[in-house]
Length: 192
Image 1 (cartoon, rainbow, N blue to C red):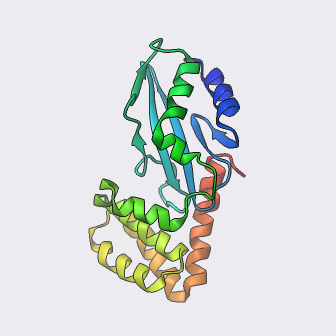
Image 2 (image 1 turned 60 degrees about the vertical axis):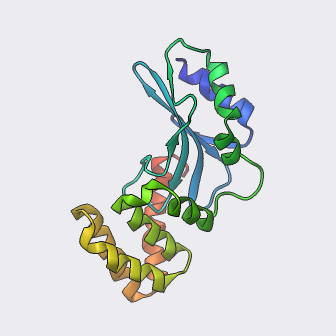
């Protein structure tokens, strides 16, 4: 697989996108990166419908993403790089990700999460609560954080407590904390 050829073809065919490694996402975004990921492994490539909330304390992860079906996985040499890009861009989920119009909103991300199996994961529940903070839903965020704290693993519990402490100082302090997380993630994706 020629990663550079895939990247060049994606940039030519997808239009106004940004790239970070195998990630290709809408150039316009606010709190959620949305696009496609070509995850290169020795035997080939997994193709993902990529979503990532920039306020996720954990950093880059695929918890909110799904492998495209089909193809899901493409073996090395199975198809050309051009056909791989064309297939990804023709997939309905990727077309939705790159559709013209405003980027994915927090409300749309909430709707996605509420209907997804990701919400069975405690970390996703923490990030949902963090999203509520970003959306200004302070009361609902406080309730959710209090509810999930006892179930969270140690690292997430630490982030939950930090967010709760920030909320005690007021919504602007909590948003500031999450904006710092956002800036770290933007740097990780080489967007700033």
